[in-house]
Image (cartoon, rainbow, N blue to C red; front, side):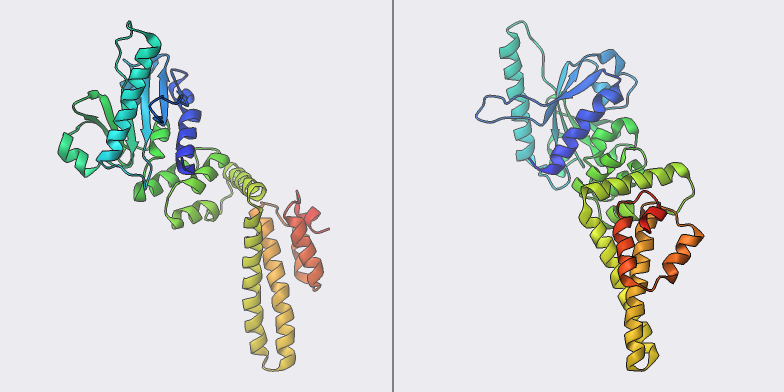
Length: 325
């Protein structure tokens, strides 16, 4: 099982009890003894009466004590074979429950397949009935077989576990919407594992608009610190980008001097510009505010080794003044 599937399952596991107020929870399933037949997970319903106020598909669990959930994320197969295999796993679970609970159990095991969209073949072959946005009953099982088309679901906090199965523009829309509604750790997991566009991923990582809102600034700081701890190579890339930019400026300045000495001075000045820009960029990313005196000290420093030492300190310092030691 790939990491995107693990992320989607973890989201179900973490969000279900909170969204349903404890009325339902997610469980990782035991292996069903049919060679190896194992569904993605179950929704175990303990308080169906508390699910009526939630939007579909949650409200469809009111008459269930368990639902088999199959997750088909962007790029996964949603052809007939994939659906038939999912139905086989549903049937195997039903057999397993009948064996475990004995002849007195007369229940039917529902299955929900969560995917980005409703596939054309299913629409043509089974004529599924849409009963709520993104929610379809599929015959011949009807109420026991629901297809959840995540791209069609509304953006709601109580539908986030299903919304992670979106794809394309719908996934980009979800990513922008949810980024301010979940913890930085969760957002980083989403950026790492879900197949959104590169532009949106970069926008959410580095494209935060400048703001004076202390709550947003604190969130940005937390995201940066999580990235710094989890992926130190990202900091190396930031520093390298700053150095490259400074080299370009220094090279242009050297060319304008018109003689060899000017080029040498321009090259040195370019490296100083590079180091100053990288230092200021790291401090800004970490929300370490420079005082006018500290900023002037950076600008006046002509020793490259000193600026690069400050740059190393800035990666872990708790204040700008601490970085400039």
